[in-house]
Length: 381
Image (tube, rainbow, N blue to C red; front, side):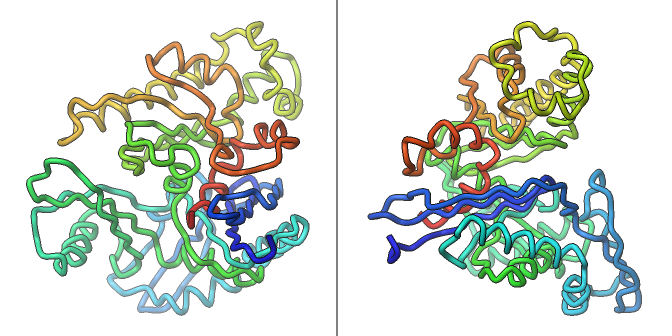
């Protein structure tokens, strides 16, 4: 085992750090170790103000504002070297690097090579259809198309195109394009460098979740990631995440309703929420409709929007996979199952990973929280 290659997936989110190390055992992924550090973290990128090619101010923004919309630019290029220097002095970076370093040590991680996720809320994601053109022309065309869609200089973005295989496309080319701010990439890179890890890849949560929960399944699937603050909706088609939408409703909202229903504090409700499988039928569904109905409407809207697009007419969604720390709250799955005639279930990200039978129950309970980090660790398999 000591000679086997291993891969570390690290998910730094608003509610802490999760990591999973997976070793290559005769070509199969085997769980080596994992770790969770629970703590509220401010992971949102600071806004950047540029004036006369000098950095005027680097300020923090709240979590209900899209950081990409906060970039101010007075017709001058962003000096990324200066920004990286400023980020290296951001107190959060040293703090988060120490947390990550501590978690790696406590978990007895056996590798320094790691992959990390970029929050989807801070990354531009789109599908671009191109006519048949020469391969060498594709990067410039994509760059020009993306520049029309984003409200900030294209020079400040790292653009990653990926060809999507399609049938009967008459020679046309379909590209899935992800664009992330270079400053965001620098923010994460410095954290890992200071933690003593070598950051090999950065990718969005969408790809990590698809890898751990959908695999190579080509059917139209929705991955519903129910976090504490928000719920993310990903439509996956042909094993590729095609669309992303987000709703500012999450586990914290369910906790508040549950606390009122049970007559307890929010903290107490948070502790007992997941263990309600035996008594959840005693809860009043009407109390939870204000937070459940918007989720249902968003699922319907996302599917309708995707299935009306050219090339998707006639496709049929097959399943909805739930994940995220709050996805185990039984009422969520039950209510969605009543509204949609398809398979609805909580995903098991450990399904593609070899692990000891004795810890299966514990891993199952942790699974929804670890889906992103597992997907990252599986990236090289």
